[in-house]
Image (tube, rainbow, N blue to C red):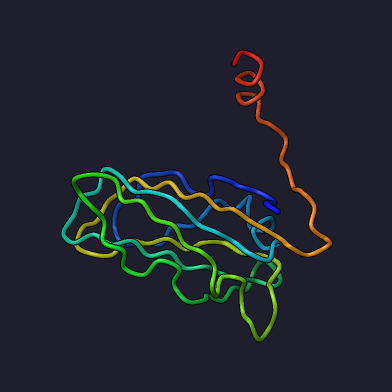
Length: 149
């Protein structure tokens, strides 16, 4: 059963600094058993630009630890879009300590003077009996669009 599908990062990244998925999804992302990441990059520049995405887990929302990279040095195309999908082999947090309550994505580029436009979606699934569909209220813009079509 799908619980949620949300755009968790949408922006232009420049340089090799750290960027993070949207803070408002940390508890939602930590509430499911399985997480799937998909997205694309466009408008890529730099010398040998690469993409890295690392899940950060936390039990209290403050102290985090990182798991293995979900995306590790994915080469980005400067001539078009680079599409990617990551299924969750080790994404459910620590297999020895159980699932953490909060989860966020650390995003950074590699290479020399890298830059790219990045959109990242997260889909959460939960197959336990406690699972229920989690929805968020529509924004004003989404409500207007649903009425006007």
